[in-house]
View 1 (cartoon, rainbow, N blue to C red):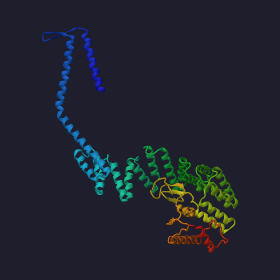
View 2: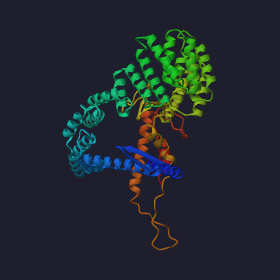
View 3: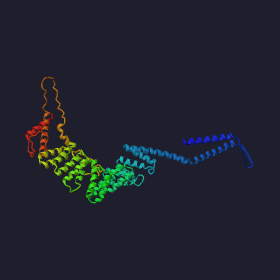
Length: 520
């Protein structure tokens, strides 16, 4: 478009010039070789312009004829290249769809039309076709050949990494991932695998450098980078806590600064500060983390911050922690444990029951059993609370990929993923909860066949289906009796008075259990 406008502008200027010369007549006299030539000015201008145009046209024709062999060769070369790229594109689509035969055919055609050193994708298509054909040895050799080309090195490392993962060679896969991460830390597959390998070896400084490289290349967001740094620094502090206390304290404080609400970071930082008798700073760290999310480990550290404190002093510290996060089960349980140690049984019982009202859980009922045994020694009530603890929801724990752990770890024990553990309630007791309320579930009534003829007579039911039901009913009664004798579970149903140490089942109780399990 710009060329057209420029051409029109030149034509307009020439026309304007000729018009200006035509309106101003004049003569031009030229003396050459003793002769004198006199022409009109407009004629001379037209002659000069025509001569220039003729010279330019003659130059263009001469140049075109001179360059015609190269032009023809370039035309066929471009045509050949276009056909090669079309074959390459078709082959890549066939490889992606799993058509090994078409991918190999297009690879041969593209290799004939395009040189492999000019187009690296031909090597990739060749390796992909070998993988589709099941020739993994040839594919690995082709990926290894790519390592010599700087442009194809990352592609070769990726292919070798996937092959090592397929064969289950984790060490080889991590080796290739590490080489790729050194060249390009922004690659997610390489950086994550290298991160897992460094964390598994305990190379916390190397893992931190890798996180910094990911952050500098903008592979991860700054918030994600800070979270990963906090996790790695927490793990580093935990590993150095017993060997290098100053380094552990520095790493823990840095982790707590990056994530103040992260309970493991706050716990290890407070533990390092308490070992250096910095009670005030460690307590403030725990208080900040407790306000964000109460955790039983934080409560235990806070209450026992001073080893020489009296039990009443520990109770007052627990009440201080409760005031920071009121109406929370962990706050009530912390006070209940401290009150139990101090002998304040009434306070301990009230706080444990308050925690149960807010969130029933196993530890609360176990704590009530401890309180009952310490205060009254009533074994019947103790077993009652133990039975409730058995069926109560489990306490929160560190869960990662279905694995529950009492202690936090930087990576998942199943997949090796960083920062996989979450503080939540495990779901392993879901089946027990269903069994507990099985008797409350609605049971579909047994279908009764209608009589053949309507009449006032009673409907007779075939007795055959009742036999399996009776067997199932008797088996359920036996299971209940066995559970009562082995586990000493006390159910909240009207029972006759018995001694606390008598876990047996009387015939009257068996009849009541039979009457309670109504299947029809």
